[in-house]
Length: 97
Image (cartoon, rainbow, N blue to C red; front, side, top):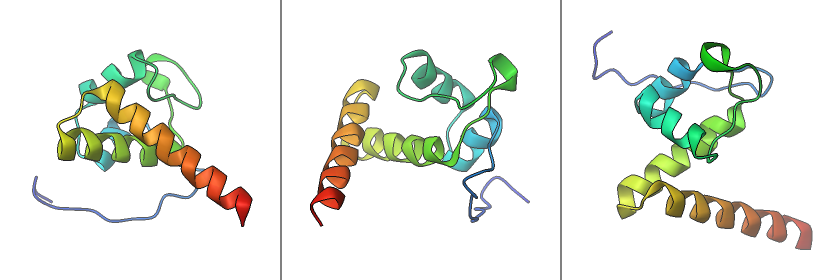
């Protein structure tokens, strides 16, 4: 497998990822993730330091943060606000149906 290989898969909700696995799945560096973790924009579901584990919801959130930052040249806080607002819209729409 080379650096340009793209892996596609399904993450089962009860499975967790390490920081490096999450970074690889998102196509970002572990440092990029650590910056968002330190800012409270992402959270781990268990562990601390190198033993941190991340649920599939954090994979989805990290992917959306990265896409908004990239596509709109947004800073990390603005991207997190947009993701939070989109999540809230989805929650409200699901309640009204």
